Length: 180
Image (cartoon, rainbow, N blue to C red; front, side, top):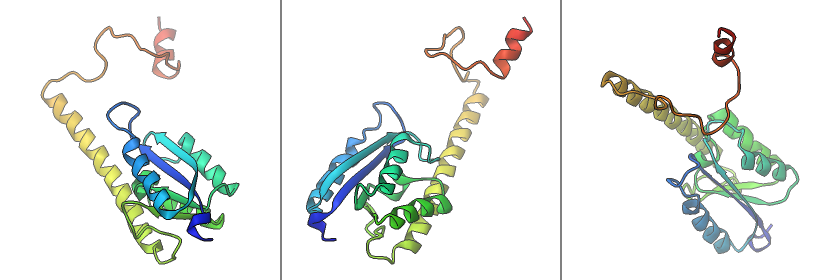
């Protein structure tokens, strides 16, 4: 299929659902890239959550639309925006795309391009690197929390602070109310 006939989908993901991360930083360059390829943008999928699991609303919708063959090319900012689940899961998603005739291209990593074939080994390496980066993030967060505890800082919600959203009653809370 020639690029000018290509139906293109864009997938963006930021890790936080707040103002500190703007998906537009990925989306706008991806739109420019799609226009440069001469294709038509038919879908845009934007998730604001961690890439550590595949249970993301727009990600799942994108996979369903892949099965329905709603687009021919999926453009992503980088492979870690698609998934940080490791080699097996990431390659599984890419194989699902390929099985449905959808190519994958990364804007930041030109070697991530399944439309020309030899990128599979590089994708496996990058999937592993993305998973390792996720582990480093977790380790740094835990180290920071441990340091804060040692410095005597109080962690968690301020005393007396009410939840802004209702919590599920399970585990500790149920045992607490039962003992009253």
